[in-house]
Image (cartoon, rainbow, N blue to C red; front, side, top):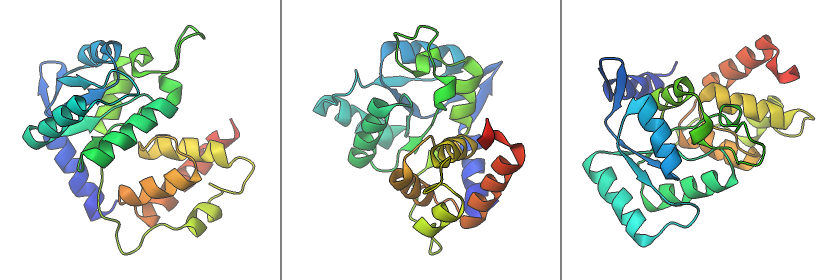
Length: 210
């Protein structure tokens, strides 16, 4: 584990307080809707801001900016196209936010007519995501490159999509296409050694063949 990664983990741990059996989150969590808020409040003690869907109003952005200045913000949107779109918009407008990612498999609804969402996740899955928040950082001098993704079969291979999904779950950075994955790996300052270790663990587990 890199020194930066260790320092981030310590900082995250210091921001997680326990009151009885409930985990208390210092930062304000940004979610998409009321159902997400209700589920998060079952899992942890936290305050939320709801975006109200795909459209982000100026008032909501200003509220998130104020929250970031006062307490810090964790963006925790649904693991789908709309959720990723909202996440990018907020991150662009409010620099320095933390990011919590929920694996898509943990957000699947029981009713096939409903879309994936945090509201469908188990309480343990939500707690795990919030324990592993990621922080945007300036890329190190040894950034991960397109060649690294190619070498690990994350692009150009028949099972590349599955490998990216498993890597996103393993590193708690969510699923992304090749372009977005490269951006996230460097944005969260994940080292080449961490990437190598993660892929080795995935291959040894045999999950890429599931």
